[in-house]
Length: 110
Image 1 (cartoon, rainbow, N blue to C red):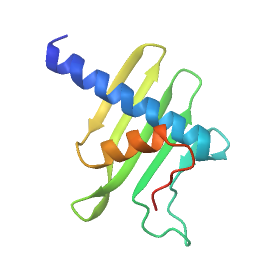
Image 2 (image 1 turned 90 degrees about the vertical axis):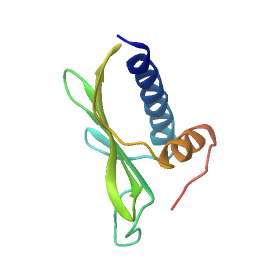
Image 3 (image 1 turned 180 degrees about the vertical axis):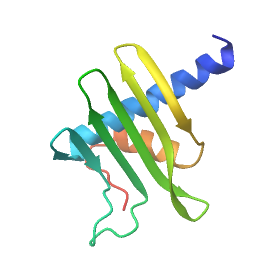
Image 4 (image 1 turned 120 degrees about the vertical axis):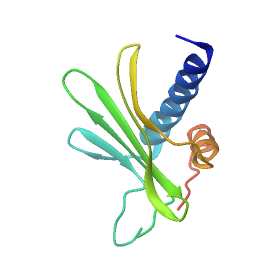
């Protein structure tokens, strides 16, 4: 693994950990999923959405954010133990926002 790939993996893992903290603090459970910032009639344009899914062999995380004026998927990853697979990762302001939200209890962005 080269330095750039290792750095990206470290950054993505930090974002995952922040999302997991946020989902634990403020997430809504739905069977095998936990949601934050779900698109609802009361929340038509969430600035940040995260969903954690658990499957028998792995877990996955999807994050959506406003990117260039549209709600877009900015992170899609799966992991089992220390093995991490990043399907998609789009850089943006959402990264610092998610990291801050994962550190500050009760802080929500809508």
